[in-house]
Length: 590
Ligand code: ARG
Image 1: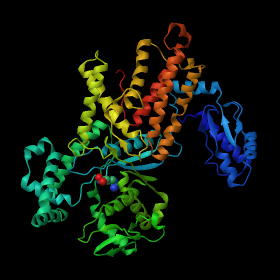
Image 2: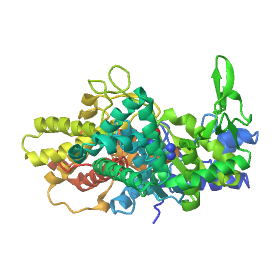
Image 3: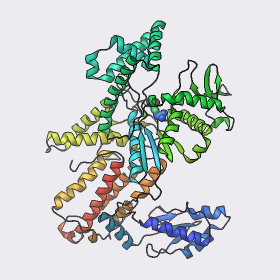
């Protein structure tokens, strides 16, 4: 069932009123949003743009609309403010009723969308034979959160891990495997061993042209389907996948598919031939590329770069001069496959901002290649910035190496264990380990989701593991604290009908709960899980203020106990659900 939340009802009445005044008007942008509590609970500023588009006086339009607006069962008198804002204040009984229906389990302040869409979400996408590094926490965490939010709102999601399992590096890896493989080391830590092979052979290839030739021969044999090379290559993928899956298991990230780049190999020749025959790509210096079509100002044109004040071609290469294909070719085949296979409304790529040029070229090239299809599918690059160390440079280990994701997660759990052991001496070691796992992983993920994703952020253990401030441990602690209230309260059976609010702190908390769905929708709309972080942090703040001012279990407040316990419970449920879509677990006790 789709719960009818008050702001949605107000919104739909408002849209009806606008249509009554302006028959045929497009009301899809007539929205109602939470506002500064000094003005009310919700506001709509939409009438101003509606009036502007029709050269009407916005205050007059607002007055006319309000005269047709029947919301007296939901709100106090509607106020027209400023140039034509409408302010709405909910009636207390409406607030109570909404909380009661939530307490009965009918909703949790959000509804499933009435217009489900299908999304393909491409995220994480590490490369085979290389360890996942700290940067992968970004794509994995943001992408997983986006898929969780979309699913929760009732959309269809196909998550696909576009693993880098093809490319020239396999020539070197095959040579290394055949000549210097250390089997026991491979069994201990396959990716470390593959990395070692690659480093040695790569250095040799740089120094000795004949070694490079040998590596190329291995690659050519692989590309030609040589059985031995194919089976070694498959073994490398399998071993890498085992390690990726271990990390995904720890992070709780799930994929519906992991169709690696190699999956598209059979299509690549056809893609290039098609682009050539349609005149979208052309040959240049033996290679094949897609060039600017001159339809954009040079500054915005990804197929041009400025060199010494002059705009020169920066084509999207789809075939190399040696006949090999490019990252771009695979991505073009991938878009085509995804659209044909899953008919998505959107394909979302959660990939580092350094690849934004690649995605601009990809989307434009695909648009030229399949103009009709492009009109019904939205292609989006959800980019993100870098993780920096204290020195403001990309985050590295002390010795200057990239930080391996598995090491980072181990350290997070270890550090959390120290913190938990200091705080909770009464718990057994096994309990403390489990709490530390949840807190440590939660802290790292949350710190990564909290900033605007396009900003770089500084990695700081102490800050992310602190129990105060906008951190996962703070929110997890808020949750556990509510659970401890219930443990102290003893056996209380739920009484949704007891819910009745009067104190300002109760009202503020309740109104914040009501906004959960709006925040989920906004996060989905902009692919920004950080909106949820901000919301949950504020929720925990409202809860603290409520708890400090409104006794829950004190004998002198017995008459409020049942109602306030319900409010505690709803807060815990929203905290839990909000953290869950961020991919963060909670514990009942800490
Ligand atoms: N494997 C690529 C890398 O590590 C990321 C792939 C992103 N997805 C895509 N469809 N291009 O840079």
